[in-house]
Image (cartoon, rainbow, N blue to C red; front, top):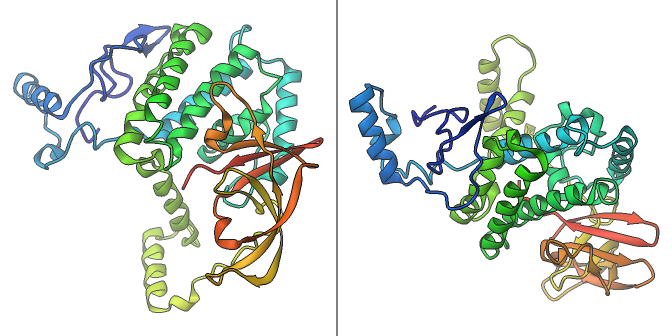
Length: 377
């Protein structure tokens, strides 16, 4: 709206490429996947100048600023990948056509697996997993949690193999683009995975499924390349701060005045702000970590010994021989997904400063799964 261009529901609704949408089953879809002509800042400004002259439309006020009107307006993965693509696919598994729909028993199985993971989710996640039946009320953080982390585990062996492989391509690509260490280095591979995902979506779910949110995944890798990671250009920080503002309001009367007064109070009396207590790294579910050399560990006990830098040492259960959790579409160790055996572990003292890469640890029979936390917000 601020760019004064077509909405996503228009025939030219994509502001990243020039593809013209097609009307299918009551909605605009984008069937083309490859060989797309990308918009540029020059094309945008030329087109807007022509439309202003021919159609007498108003120009965006941003045009007067030295901005790139394409690259500096990034795709927001919170709305388009999480609330858009992930939710749409899960809903299709539950209520879609017979060839992609799970049975009531399968849905219940996935839900039970999700609930069993609640005790394994560390405090860096604001919400615990919920049942699939609550999908209409899932928040963006829950959908991200499913797309990047838990979905890989709970769908295995229940969702049809072809659908699972399709979801895994999306999950791995999104995982790569969320990691500051991987988003740029493996950008081309994540782009290939997203291209495969979008192309396969048309084959599995039909032409009507190729809506703007699905199409926008083709441009997601470019956003991560431009900004370093998807979290650097998402709406998650904005939404998180809205929650902080909401907690400052005590009644429905004059909310803006209340927020302003609370900020003045915090500025004048900083001691009234709550002091965050240091969370111990030796309690479940916050004691699982991925070490620099790719090994996994569980912090057990804090010791009095210090290393050379003065950092306390933590007694950890280290899994020396870890294996990839999966090998398709890539070796899962690339995105921090490991599988270990309880009997193949040793106790070691590790400096606390090395325990920086938090992980989700899931125990299943004699096997233990570690999923590195990739998102930063």
